[in-house]
Amino acid sequence: MDRAIKVCKRVVSAFSYIWKKKRQLKKVQTDLDLPTHSLITSCDTRSGSTQKMITRFFEQENAIKQVLLLDRKGSSLQPSWQDLNVVEAVNKAVEPIIYFTDALSGENHVNISMMMPVLQLLNDDILAPKPDDVALTIEIKSKILNYLNDKYSDEKSTTRSLLDIASFLDPWFKNKFLYSAEDESTQIKISGELIE
Image (cartoon, rainbow, N blue to C red; front, side, top):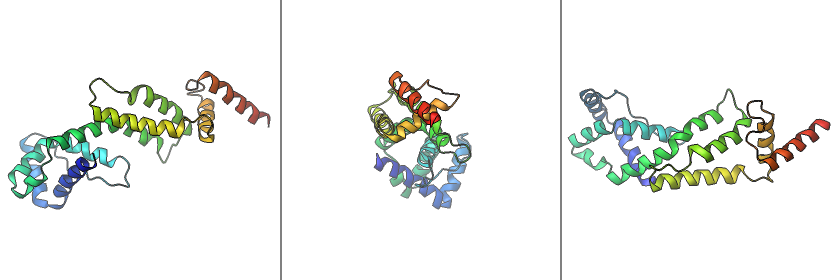
């Protein structure tokens, strides 16, 4: 998986640094009636930039292939079909959770009470295996879910208790996302806090 993403980064870097390739890409984009977007580079410190790079890469895939075929030296940058399949599987697994990442990590409006409802939505719907998912996509989705569930679903942890209380007190969610045993213990904790 890392190799396929590195290949994608190499191709995008070539179009970023070599002005002739960038000019050829714009020309081919207009010939193919594609939007004349430049390619997006990935940055480790920017959240979601790798997924944006992959999405733009697939949007401009035909133009990229034509430009690389025109240049003898650029043919070594041409990604193989295996690389494209791996990158597409990664994109399919990661794309749905980008919106939740942005919503939960916002600077202006951060809401801890959204964490448990989002986790349940990811478990039940967004990251659930779909019939058209390939094996790699299913594996990536399950690893993401396992990581999130291990981190936030331990009933004895103080983090989980805090998340349950925040969701319970939020008028949007109340106790919709708590199981019956958790609901009672959360109500008891809140009652105890109010009495003190």
